[in-house]
Amino acid sequence: MAQQEEKTDNVPAIPFLNLKAAYMELKKELDEAYERVMTSGWYVLGAEVAAFEAEFADYCGVGHCVGVGNGLEALTLVLRAWGIGAGDEVIVPSNTYIATWLAVSHTGAVPVPVEPCGSTYNIDPSRIEAAITHRTKAIVPVHLYGQPADMDAILCIADKYGLKVLEDAAQAHGSTYRGKRAGGLGHAAGFSFYPGKNLGAFGDGGAVTTDDRELADKIRLLRNYGSSVKYVNNATGFNSRLDEMQAAFLRVRLKRLDAWNGKRQLLAAWYLRNLPISLPQVALPAVPDWAGHCWHLFVIRTADRDILQRELAANNIGTLIHYPIPPHLQQAYAPLGHGSSSFPIAEKMAGEVLSLPMWPQLSLGALAGSILGRTNPFNVNYKGRS
Ligand SMILES: *Cc1c(COP(=O)(O)O)cnc(C)c1O
Image 1: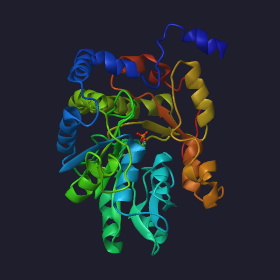
Image 2: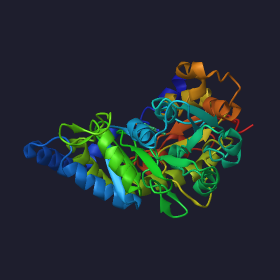
Image 3: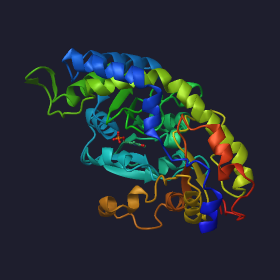
């Protein structure tokens, strides 16, 4: 270990993520946006939110966008607006960030997990029908890590059973499925603008996108105390609003989204080309030809994940695990009674996945100069998929 640290003393560290770099690149425009909002004297539900909603709806190719407080609430509000609640079931992936499940639980409905494909990590459409009961009301596919779920197959099943499809697009800003952007692939979509997402705010934020005007109107009511006219309340709503400052920042970031996704694409291409040399036996992400991946995360798999993570850390390369414990094994979901081994694919993934540095300002030169640019530097054959 000490030897490795000495060896790499003069190699700059590669953090997993560097959000300050995004600010520094856009400092002038972001500072202007800040000034504009501060001097406007209007901070909630104003011109910036309206403009961002129009711009993001246009970007996603849908008729409507409604800015809300965060990604979890975007998903929750759509399910509530559809009337989903106690006694209902909603199909979710067994491997996802827990927010997908929480959105279902917060309506009073029960999340019903379905396992992913072993290669794409997204919900396996061929397993969905077996999970449908007379209580099932909707399917929430997640475009995990930025790779779109197989939407045609999912929509086909939804059609057959009369179910709604809500995209969890929290990791999929700019992803495409057969050439069409995420956010416009199902009946509605929920986005998160948490700072680390491909389109990130400098605080919390979220949005619902849809072509359904009636749904968009309902979300507008629900996000604002159930009110469209001040002090007149038509529904028992929430306070979940995107604020003016975040909307102004997001308008600056949205103009860079495609260019920054392009940089992520270059980094992903570098990893796909070089990792077979530096980490010969690690499993790489598989991208079907119909998928336009936005590379929110670059996730590899190895049975020796914990050792590899330590080795990379010793060489100043930051990594994270998305996600170490699947939702069904979290204490929060103990009441559902899914024991260990009930979703073996999700559980295996949790033990093997590792996310490598992926952010638009990270340079290819830094990657090439790091230990990941060498030939089998650890001289270990990490086990891939078993
Ligand atoms: C980030 C994320 C969410 C939640 O978004 P927040 O804005 O943090 O509430 C939901 N689903 C997935 C898949 C996410 O990655």
